Image (cartoon, rainbow, N blue to C red; front, top):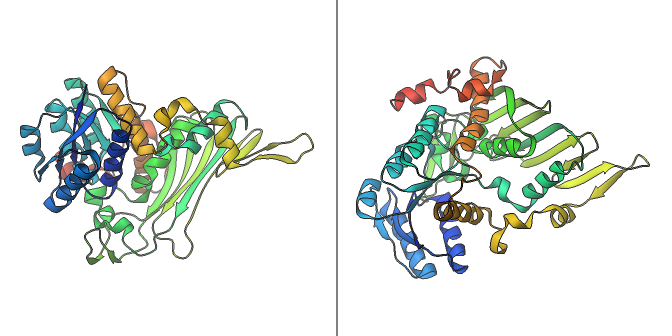
Length: 383
């Protein structure tokens, strides 16, 4: 079965999806990029040109997704836009009979994400969230070592990163607007972390957090080449304590307001050892740690079955799984339910901050019982 693919959004992350389609094409995967849609016709036309050159087919260019759905017979749609548009675009695509993969986070609010999941179930369509971090060789190997008990029972996880300073993150001013993004780095970057928490450690029970906006003005070159000055309405820094259902605890930080040297690290401590940025150290018989370097970790523990056709690019891998589910049945590893669960962990950060740093149960956020921070977003969207 040859798959007819549409793409909505031809900005930064969409290029990764286009490259994924091209890589699958080089492996003779039977697909065709039939339609590309972007509010800026020039960006969509550029994608069409790349498809012509790299895949030998020229997709039709649209600036209105409704016209694309009306005119094109599509099997699936890939959506890579700002968060506010995710449910607005996904639901009509599902209603039109298309399977959908939407970029992370699943939606701008929990309520919007639930509407997307409900639409997929009503129309019996495959619905996947494009969350690629767990699909890399090292994260897969870390999961395998944890499952094998190499470092024993996980006690603590530290997931922290920061940088950017006072510039516009990724040249995208919308990422600093609460109305468009929902939340700052603890959602936009943090949903990657939240998915890894679920994948590596398990369910998150509660979160206690603070979030703030240090940089009141940001200046930088945008993806369209302009130099812009903006005044953010979303946070740029969050710090959280995380309690997992299995008793593990975590410390989690994301910031776009760190000047000087950027940093990032992930450390998991267990009852027998630790994994520090991909390096394993376990307790030795003489009291000294026995080290396994990152390369050896991947070589020993990477599950080859999760890398079909030798593909290593994580975006290509998530696309391949999505297309296989469409053609042969099955549920994507990160479906709407998993995507929403990861987002609920992130929104527990914002709900905790709105409650003065009080602990917030993730399940209460997921169930919609706690939504103080999200309420204005839902009201603005009529949700």
